[in-house]
Every structure is written in structure tokens, then in C-alpha cells.
Image (cartoon, one colour):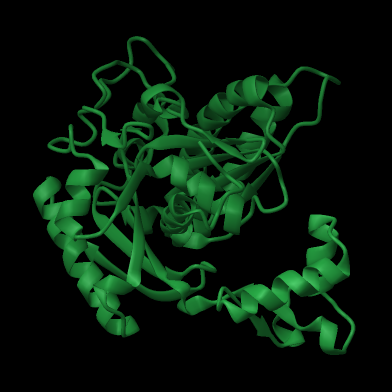
Length: 366
């Protein structure tokens, strides 16, 4: 941003800002950018030049472990993307296969970016299961077989870099709140509507993970105590009715070979069966979101994950559930919007976690 914007944001005098910027420029911490690169409208003239962190200060890595895919981003300390790679995990991959793939992707990304491992200051990692963010350790769970007891230290040893860990839904929320659709809000609820249904919570610009990272597990809200067995060991969880595997299972009576891209194509063609299945699943997710809204009252609900590709087909039932189940006239119903980072939301959250661990990003904290 410009010096004038810095003065407004910090409530410091323009002369103080000028002196501080001069000193930081001399030390190589910040650099100037032309006015046309600013995100704000400014007057022309010498004071309209933008101030940004010096990209050469260092680089961070964000790694998003999915159930089948590993996505890795490299950025500078201003979160500007330098390289992006991804790889496919074999079926039923364990911790060794996952970390071997991550190490290979890291080497590939650094080579593409022309960087050395020593240029990387920190790595943020998102895992699709429970993580204790305080202990920086994976919590034992059937969702991540073989990962129990792995820690930031043990994973960092494998990657030969310092590492911070968190749950993927938490980091999807962090990515969207800091860099995406949640920018400008102080509280947000990000719902990952995917192979499982999870939520990340930001309240007062703080990430809320709960004891041992247990917050946000809305996919395990009870829908039917006699329902299908969930991978967590309980019966009738939201995941067993509304996550992508449950949606595809419901479609297979009419489309035995359907996969997720085929389901999205049916939605694009306004297939009534596909629309009904998607709407029914979204209504159940909407009920869970409405319960979370009564407790947290976020400014905005952000939808990410594979099912966000269905757009209004799933947004409208979630909005309707929020309106129906909120307390009348007590407070505004939060906006329900799609995330703006595409498939990069969780990896960008891992980038934010790495920057936060270094002290370059202090806005959102556990």
C-alpha cells in the first residue's frame, strides 16, 4: 500500500511513516512498487508509490494433503505464488507414501522456482483429519490411518525444514479469511463440502481450533442414530448422508458408473435427479451451518470443496436453512458465498500458517 494508506491504517503521522519506510528500505525489509501495482486508487506523484515486503527476504511452502491428491505451493513472504505442483496418492496411502510424495513435489517445485532448500524459511501443512495445533501433533483417528503420533518435528525431519501442522478445514478457513472471500470480515465460517464435511472457524480474526483441534467437525453432527456407519465409528453422521461419497452412492441406482465429474455434468444439464440429491445433501449441511450460526454468529459463511462447483444448487438450500433456523429479528443472517481461491484455498491457508509461524502474518492466531 502507499505511505498515505499506511499512515491511515497505523494512525501514525506521514512524517513518521516516511522515516520508518526509509529505514526499512535501507535495511532491505521493504521495497517500493509503482502506483499501478497498488490495490488502492491513489493520486499520481512520488508519494503514490507502494510499499511492500521485499520478496527476497525468504520463501515459504504450503502443502495440502488430500485423501488422493497432494498440492504444494511456494510463495514469497508477501504470499505471492512462485511455484505450484501437485501429485496423486495411491489408494490407501499411508504416512510414508504421503511424505515421500510431498518430498518429491518439494524438490520439483524448488527446481521450477530456481530456489534452494535453504531459501525456504517454513512449511505449513494441512491434513484431512484431527490435528492438535498446540502440541503440533496428529491426533489418532480412523480418518488418517498410520498418521497418529506424527508431529511437526517428525514431519519436518523428513522434509528437512521447519514445519507447522493444522487440520485442512481450519486452513481452508484461514486461506479464505486472509486471502480470499473472507477478506474484510472479522469472523467467518468456512464449510468444506467435499469427501467429508468440515468447517473452519474464525472469530474476531482468530482461528478457533478448540481442545486438541476438535472444533469444526460438523461432518460428525448426528443426522440419524440408526443411519449408516461412519468412518469415525459412529452411526448416522452428516458425512454419511451429505459428503461426496454419499451423494454418488445415492445416484448409482440410476447411474451405476457415475463419478464426481459425471455428477457435475448432470447438474450442468439440470438433471432433476442430480439436482434433488445435491439439494437434499445441501439442506442437511445447511442445518449444521444453522446450528453453528446460532453459536458463533459469523459475518459470512464461505463454501469451498468439490460440491461448491454446484453453485446455487447447493448455496440456496444452505441459505434457506439459515433463514429458517435463525432466531427471528434477533440478528442478521450471514451471507453465504463461494470461496474465491478455487482449489488453492487450503494450500493458501498452509502458506498463511507458515507466514504466521514466522511472524510475518500476525492478524489471525489460534
